Length: 368
Image (cartoon, rainbow, N blue to C red):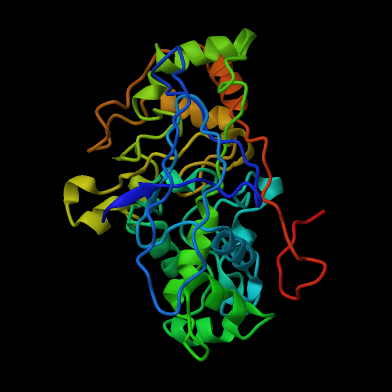
């Protein structure tokens, strides 16, 4: 599918974006994204796509946008509202925000995610910051786009809406003036059905604005242990081998020996059908990593320092199929502490802006 760059709607969110490439000292000039390609004309016409002011930080290109789901202010606003609406779930108990909360680093703070009906799921919830940069979604990479991931999470255990998403889409469209918003955004005629794909496109458009940056690392403001940790990160510790680029993830799948002994969750191997990929999982972004404990796909490590120590140790070399880059780096306790200090500088200064909790029944709101 061809893709185009987008300009983030500044009137909705003023979220700073990610920083420099982890493999470089200097930062280049800011990239200037192009205006999104015009959506092919439909009858009736959808709301025209506006161009928005968006400052791309040095060293970062704007996220790519599918040509069949271009950005507009109204679409992002609609997706923003849907993201927080618990009525999308099968039992009305959970929204997207339920698993991606501000006070928990835009994850959920649990070893394993909690789904509809308070059912514990099988994997840890990752942060949603910079999700627009992933080309394969979920820990195992089974969804090729945000739109597909939204449909999967909505239908499956996360939100438990079940197989009849078409009925659920019609139900949500009947709430609180949603129908008029969908008609305006997608050019629907009076009486046209709102489809699951319309819901997924709106939510995905909003999620593409959730950009995390403007940290001390992005601003070349590291000092002391954090600076020493950065030097280790891209040098002796070799963390940047996999946690590369401005999103600190190569987007690839690696076996680091976590839960291999259990033999149950084979990760990307189930998706690819290749046994060589068994027990491999996508490299997570390190953005907000100090706020998103516990760690790894199964939430098996509670503390960041322990996670860093495990990764720097090379794991259990008796396990077959470990990634070739996963090795004992010979780090001292002091060097582990320096790496942790560096990772603490990657905290996102942003919050998801919660809207409508005072006036719209069913909107999920942050605790506290």
